[in-house]
Image (tube, rainbow, N blue to C red; front, side):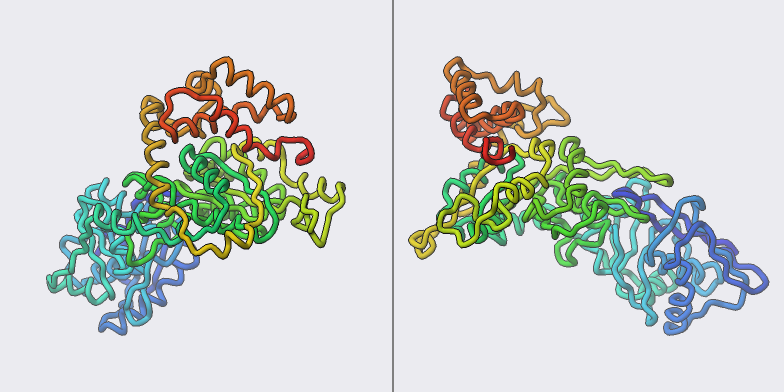
Length: 512
């Protein structure tokens, strides 16, 4: 007897429906075909034990299971429940009339209980698109899948519930969530708040400008000046994610199994801070079984690279193209997969190996040769993609011991959001550009027009400070954002002069 059960394979951030055909015939043997990996090949032992512990068995018949499309590689243990239900239905141990209306996924424990799976959200989206009536999956993933409307989601704890549903008609409890309510619940309660930061008003201002225009930023300063503390608070002042962005972000985290059980949808922008020993593949994604890397996990959020010169140079260089294109395409002999990677890069570094460059009270100093060797680890083309360079100085004791609270993240975010709204209107006809940092040369010429006095100021600054040509466009973009924060239609001289200050690393004496 032949029975069909439906599962799903996740490739990249998209899912493909897999038809599991189970055929029982006279003879003996258990044959699984259709490019399963080792985890799926081992499933017959888990299935046999789970069925036996729930009063069923794999009968002594010839069972052939085909996972179609047969040329697509299937991986992971999430097909256990799909295969088990298929075997029970094909061997007439349960009656399952409406089996083909459902997509069924889950990893089995030996006692029949279910373990969570990866990629529940993209699988649910595909199931809804293909017209399935419902999706049966482990209860830990139910909230995540329930984000998708138009599909009944049934979170189950054990195979026994699924068997009783199909065989005895016992109802399963449907998981329903209010996506808007879930999304708004944690929006105004950031984990880290700018009010915790003592002093550093100029750096806070820089962070506000970076958040308002989506600019990449690098913080340069000695140890203990507060670089990491400031970077961790950046997501709290970014504009709230739209529902579309939240779904997109949740989808990527779902693929790697990083969505928390009790949340379902990710309302907070992601903040990723990989260690400097990270490899190329871990940063941009890929591998023999393709997975999103850190740049994709920080999509719509912040990627923080602490101690930038300590990262391997080749690792930093692979980031150049994703920073420009805001997506990364990984091509191998057997597959090509594209992951979105539109993130804000925040980097921090010490100005020298000892950390105390330009500090006369420093106990340790570095020679010019050591300085040059240290700073040359960061290539010009990478710095070219960072709009704001700012020096962070240590906070004096008077500021540290001050008991007054600083401005809260929510207040700063109101100004940032207002500036982003102006940018959204400005670029409403563009599909690829949504905020100032994404402007190309043509758009810079159109939206960053300077009057004669401002142009003269910029010319003088570039000559006197010996700023590089690459700094020109960056200064214009940043000055456009500063003007937006003040709701100014035109870029003024004050906006230009402030933007010029944020190009420290282009000056002589830094990256020569």
